[in-house]
Length: 70
Image (cartoon, rainbow, N blue to C red; front, side, top):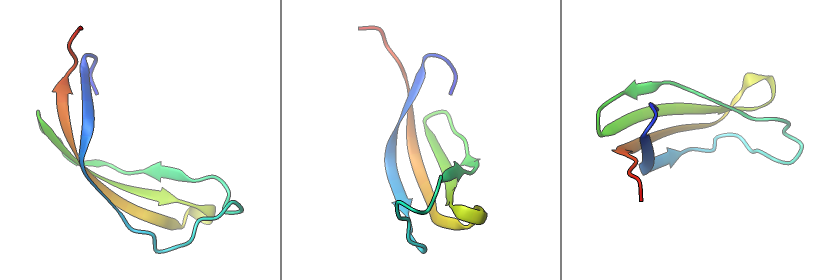
């Protein structure tokens, strides 16, 4: 995000096809913005676990807004 801009979630969808436990090791979230916009942004993500297996695919819709000084 550029300076002076923030975002908040409109919708988040997460699926959990594989279990994640305290012994699963580190997790990594990766993925692209699939449709950037001035006010609404769509993004897809994958949470990767051990051996780069997808443990949680996700998608989100974000509302983008300017930050204002109080």
